[in-house]
Image (cartoon, rainbow, N blue to C red; front, side):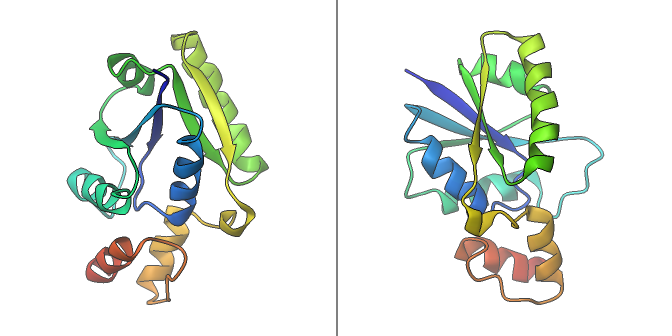
Length: 156
């Protein structure tokens, strides 16, 4: 069974994230959406909220959603994953993701990183932009699932 980890902070999950996830499901037998917990990072949604938003947003997909602390490679080893899925929007994403992929390979050469380009219609989309738009009371149609839009309205 080909198991992949799709990691991120997902604060919050966007339609761009879902696009990458749905396309990754065509490649792997099982995908675990891994919600990272980093000390010192200022999240809008706590870990449980992010996990629940993702579970609701992906209920039409066969994925697992789990949170993790520590290194991504250790989590991948624990879950017996052989790949890490990363979404790319632009060249600037690639520079950062390439460095992370090389570091992960240094930690465990058996775990591959697979990059999936997001569709052009989502290339501008990031969790940060969505949060900023929500705080400005902008319409978020097409940017995030409905449950996430509702949660953002409550937080802002």
